[in-house]
Length: 365
Ligand SMILES: Nc1ncnc2c1ncn2[C@@H]1O[C@H](COP(=O)(O)OP(=O)(O)OP(=O)(O)O)[C@@H](O)[C@H]1O
Ligand SMILES: [Mg+2]
Image (tube, rainbow, N blue to C red; front, side, top):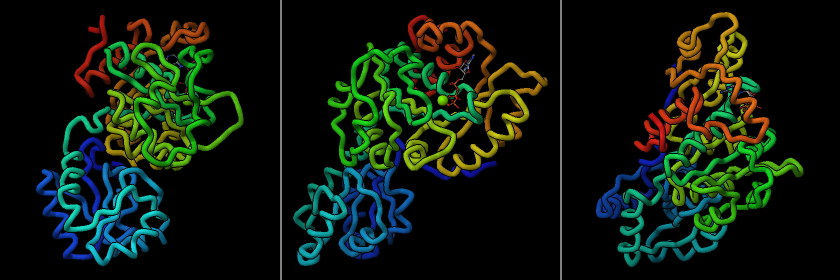
């Protein structure tokens, strides 16, 4: 069974990075006053995997230089915290670290309690995030991602479909949206701080409750992990449901998305070689996933059963997809997957969206 180490993203606690026992005692007391528990890392090495997913990071002045030297990525909601006297030397480091605030204790105690309280408030970042990746090329991951997003929007969830596969050809094409005006990835790759959620949603191509962040047909550019983190952070605050289509070759941005996802699905055709290829994808992805399961897509030319594929991968079987020739014809005509609300793909997507959110699409069983 692959390891599943991560904590559910929507319940992640703030992160405190300090090895100063007195400062830690103060911060634990303030967190308790704000009604949240915190995770504690005594140095940057211990902080690294929790740095991006945490909703708030407080770095003690004792660990500011070490964090800088460790080149932890810039992120939003980063606060340098220390006592009057220690903090003065921390101003320049705060700037270099990209800290939004320097909190000087004891004066900043009420302000810090408010920040902790925000982290515990349901609604600060409530969107459910689902990520999809293919077990081999052409597995059906992008079509499933599109189907999930269309289905969530049909259920009146404010949805973002996020294309994280630079070589995928553009998810706007999967929806038949390539002519729609709006922002594409290249314009956002410089984002590294707090992205304004309403402004992001207004700028993206949209129809009804669905907005899409896709590639354009220009030069190939990489999405830095910081840009992915900032975009996901805005999406979690500004949307109800986020679907991320990931590349099989995981880059830093894809890892950031896997860590942020409540559920990750790997789509695997019901074939022996596809299962062998998927085993490699699963081995690379699983350490970053909170909840990874498999969706098996037919036909099964050799009679391989979905449950056998799941067992071979050591994953739970989240669903199956029967062959759906009409879907391919529709895609060629520019019809979005699952748009009609009928057929195996639409039904699977309805079940997944309902499981995660309790919302059902109009007309869904
Ligand atoms: N549910 C489905 N039913 C029938 N055909 C499908 C389905 N899903 C995908 N296909 C077919 O498989 C093709 C590849 O699907 P898709 O682009 O979703 O795969 P992928 O895993 O994202 O591939 P890539 O490796 O390019 O990212 C589609 O163009 C379509 O023809
Ligand atoms: Mg794809």
